[in-house]
Figure 1 (cartoon, helix red, strand yellow):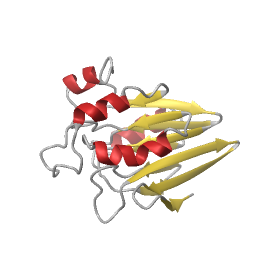
Figure 2 (cartoon, rainbow, N blue to C red):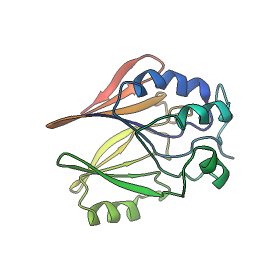
Figure 3 (cartoon, one colour):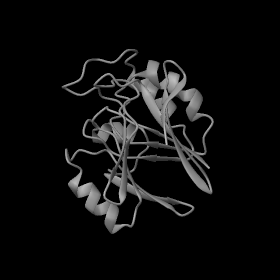
Amino acid sequence: MKIAVISDTHGSLFYLKRANKYLSEVDRVIHLGDYLYHGPRNPLPNGYNPMELSNILKNFKKRTFITGNCDSPIDLKLLNIPETTPYAVESYGSYNFFFTHGWDPNLDDSILLAKKFKCQYLIHGHTHISKFEKKEDLIIINPGSVSIPKENTPHSILIIEINGNIHFSFIDIINDEVYMEY
């Protein structure tokens, strides 16, 4: 199974199109929120076109969409998301994932929930900074931002491959290269 995890597209059709070649090759797409609006603290991203971006996103057949802090009820309606989803718990084989946008700066609430649901992986967006770290018995991962990366991280997505083992690849969608893997 191959899963793509993206976050923080913020209305950028340009960067989603760069990511789309990877998204079309996976079994499932997980979007960690902040779909259409760029937010009051972010610059307008390159290729800002939330309507066209929504047309691409809502056509993904096998998907999980998490609500981010910049997502409004009208955004969710436009994307055919029936209700606000602050997190999702999904299992693939023996691997349990807790997906959230990550509004809590220290992730304390998310960590507690991930442990409650016996997840080995907590995957979140929000910070626009890609990372892979172990905190106690939980692996915490951020795929970075597709459209507005911060702290000199690339425009990125995460690919998770599960074939008995699990493999994580962070893809720089501008240079078309893996820049981190575990």
